Every structure is written in structure tokens, then in C-alpha cells.
Length: 174
Length: 378
Image (tube, rainbow over all chains, first blue to last red; front, top):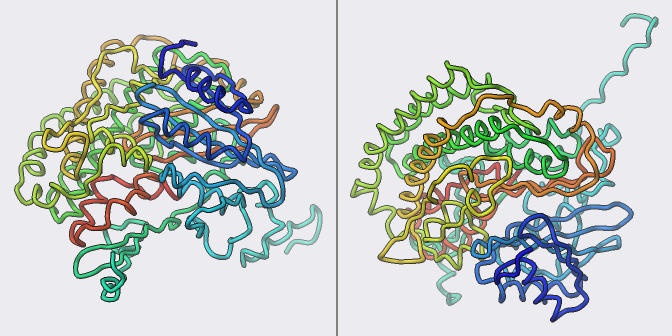
């Protein structure tokens, strides 16, 4: 990896010098992944905001790893440095919590709202955690969690008629 | 804002029944005819594409993506394929790389033709709504000739492309592109040269490059501010052909307000985008080599993917379009697929751009951002 200013590895080193708890993992190309403890997310995101003048908040989303384990992934892109920084935060518990970063990057406001309604990850101090995409009856159901079943077992909730059982082979014709 | 001003305010819902609000609604708080607050609402098109992707295999997944934004189907399906190709090692033939790129640029032109009509229609220029849409039919005919479908094309597939170019298709593409080239000056006169149109767009929907970056805007919306941020140049996908030729990133730098853009700048930016796409197609067609169009092992290799994570990105018509894919070992379907639509950011940014504008300027502001509801609802 190159060591020119604006390269992803230089940024990772600057961040690790200040916060030694962070682990970094190079990805293919001028890209780096940082594994961030949940309580430090605001420090790291504001540091990216200061160090990278044209950081674009590209994406934020949750991943359900089952057994009450979750990950939140933040992706930032810089056009000038042509680099990508991916932050990975591991969360645990029935109702995982993490601090909001929507005041540092307003573009992540709706991403946090979406992750909250789909995964039940609570973003503390977020100004507006109303439902974004879901209809009201799915509030608190967290449909993107793996425990949210989408098979026939939840047919009653839909109000649709149950499919007729198939005739047994060799049985009476209907 | 003092509270007594808000005493005289009224609340208006713009959409979802409004003709130009195609599948979305914004709650506007209005004092006089000035908008003081805008609260965009999402969710009218939400069909949980990300959950659906968890139940489709790696060759089917891209077909869900192209249904999210049918105007740019070739571009919309590609990030998923790019993400799959990051996880599994496939050798995409040179011919397929160039064919993919040509079709993506052709699709970009088609999508911008659609946008011309839509934007002008929203501002009341009905003739300009119909003319580009008539031309667009020729592009759709060419898509149909190649893939058998006008909108849901499913052309690219992990490892290559599905259908080879035929002489009949090439002739149809030439007709469509020639029409675009011939009519560009006419449309330029009708929109950019029209005093009425300039009055309605100049100085409307103003933002700076710094603001746009913070909101997450990308694509033409940020290039209109003078920042040449373009993934085709910055982070070219190894399985596309953008680095084989020499081309320039289209960018507008308005001398009157450098580093900022208004609705008119964004219109000019999209004219430039078409010119660049025409240029790229013209340079790629002569270097199209003969050979296979798909990796022969693509089918067996994509049945089950190794455990891994891939991030596929492409510069869509509307901005950075990406899919983040996580796979578990020996699974036939992805564990998690996150779709990042470019319009998620541009729709959100209405909240910041619109307050202070006049009610009549509202269609000019959202039209110039080119929002498509499928991208934020998914």
C-alpha cells in the first residue's frame, strides 16, 4: 500500500496513533476497515470529519449475526484521496444501542432511522427516530432481523385466505 | 424563525396524488407562498428488496435490483454483480467487459432522456415532455432487440453478459444514438435557451459543494458544483472498461458562483453527461474484440459462494449506486445485501434545500435533483 498523504493506510495510522484501541484491516485497493468499539464511534467519525475534508457519508447499515449479535457498518468515501474507509462496530443484546453521528454527518440521519426500524438498533440522541419506510403496523417488529419469519407461519397476520391443502394422492377427487 | 410567523402557517401535503410526485409525498409548512419547513416522507414504494435478496441465489439477485429503478436497469443491476465478482474469482472476458460498459452508457443516455422529459413536464413545458420520450422509444427498441425486454433487461450476469451483440441490434443502437446527437442542440435551445425556463431554474435550489458532501449527494448533483467526483474515474470497477480509453469527467463550473450549484447548473450538467456517454460509446465500439462473452465456469462457481464480503459500486445516472454483500460458507443465498441508492441522499436533502424557497419553485428543486422513489424505498 502506498504511503502518500490521502492514502487509506495513512489515515488509519493517524487514527490508531490517537486511539490505540482501534484495529485496522487493509482491504483491496486504497481501502481500509477499522474495527471500532461502540463507545468510541463519535470520536472516530468526528476525526474522519476533521482529517478528510471531502468525506462523503456513503452508507450506514446493520447486519444481524443471530444470537443477539449485530454489526453496524459505516462507509465513507473521499474523492480527493480516492479512498474508502469502512467502520465496523459490533453490538450485543436484545436492544443494542449506539450513539448517533447524524449531527456530524447529516446525510446519515435517514440511514440511522432506517437501521433503527429494520433492526431495532437504538441510536441514542438521534433527533427523529420515526418510522421511515415501514407501515405503522410493523413498528417494533424489526423485519430485517433473522428472527422475523417470512414463511407460511405468519399467514394469519396478512389477512389472506389460507391455501387449500393439496389433495392426497389416490384420495377422493374434490 | 420567530414563533408568531408560524401562527399564520399552513400545512400542505405535496403528493402522493400529485402528478409530479410519482410515489412520494412531502409535508410542506407554508407561510404566504414561502416554504418554511419541508418534511419528505418515504415508504410508498417499500417492497423490502433487501429482505427479498436474502431468498434469491446469486444469479437471480440482480433481477430484483433492476426492478428498483427501471429507467437505469443496466446500471442498477450491476453493483450486485460487481459485489458477487469481488467474492468469487471469475475471469470476465475482455469482450464482455466492453459490452457491459457500452450498454451501461447507452442506458445512462436513455435514463437522462427520460429525466429531460420529466423535469420539463414538471415545469409545465409539455412539448419537451413528449419529444425526448419519443426519442427514448428508439433506445428501448434497441434494448428489446438485444435482451428481449424493454425495461427489465437482466443483461449482465456474474462472469460476463448473457447476449451477444447482433448486427440488427448495432443498427438499432446507431439509429437511437444518432437521433440523440441530432436533437441535442434542439433540446438545448428549448430548455437552456428558453428565457422562461431560465427564470424558473436560475438561482433556485441553491447549495454549496461542502453542504452536498455532508448530505451524501453524489453523481451529477455534486459534479454541478465543480467537483469531478465520478466513480468511473476514481474507483473504476476491474470488470468494466472505463480505464481502457481516454475520456474526461463531465463537470460544470459556474463562474458566477464557483463551488455552488442551482437547478440550472444541474440541467447543464446532465446535458454534459450525455455528451460524455456518447463519447465513451464511440471510443469503445472500435476496440470491441471478438471472443467469448462469459466465463465458462461462471454457472458452477456462483452456485455456492465462499464466505466473504464484497462491496460493488458503480456510477449510476443519479450518483453512487452500491451493493454491500455478505455471504456465509456454502450458502446459496446472501446473508445480507445492502442496497445504497443515490436518491436516498438527494430525497433527504430536500429537507435542507427547500426551506426558504417559494412554493412554485418546489417542482424545479426536486426535479433538478432527479429523484427516483425506488432508490430510497427499495
